[in-house]
Image 1 (spheres, one colour):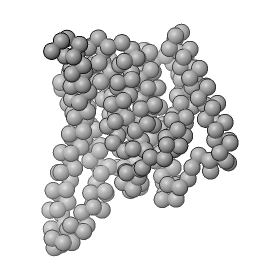
Image 2 (cartoon, rainbow, N blue to C red; image 1 turned 90 degrees about the vertical axis):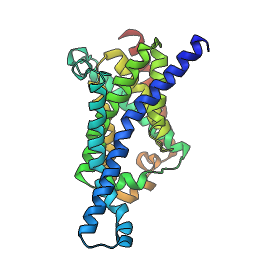
Image 3 (cartoon, rainbow, N blue to C red; image 1 turned 60 degrees about the vertical axis):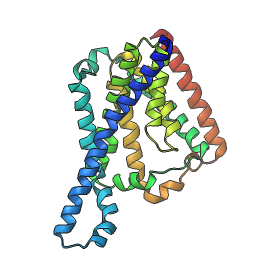
Length: 274
């Protein structure tokens, strides 16, 4: 096996390892939640068939806690393994504060482009009901809107991008591979293209600033907006399209074009000059 093939397998191995470390705690805490729910239902005098019938709702009610605990556990594992130095990664003096407003505006434009594009693809939303259910609880709101995004930035920008750079990959290979993994691990068809595009934007920001601060701010803003919309519109939000928001397809396409030009133009300048 030649060196090039070895390097490819090594890169694949790193991507898989980081993804596994991030998601294994979710499985562990989910199993624990199921176990304790079973004990709780049993103490309430429920029979086996009643426990089985109530388990889906019980698990959904605990998902927020599962995601909070598993996210914290995953980050702790990365720190223990010395895959990341949180103090160094969150240094505020590396954040380009003068450009921060422009970065945020251009990023929001890019996120809007990716969301409209994802809607046009009309992929299946396999986790919509679970997300809607989670967003109704305080723990779910915190998990989706705050803890989850920060843990994901630490994992897929802070850990994975640094590991790929250690393998000698160039800037764009590092950004694109990390964005691909970030999108793929969402495992929900409707979210995958959106997450990949957003992963590229956040990857550029992290590569240029060497700080996760702005990445986390943008990720938290995006997810918190999603939580807000789910709580405002509930189940009816599933049928709400960007054409409804902007007042027709033409306005949506115009918005898409303008946001695309704004985002691409800024990040092209930002990559070359900043």
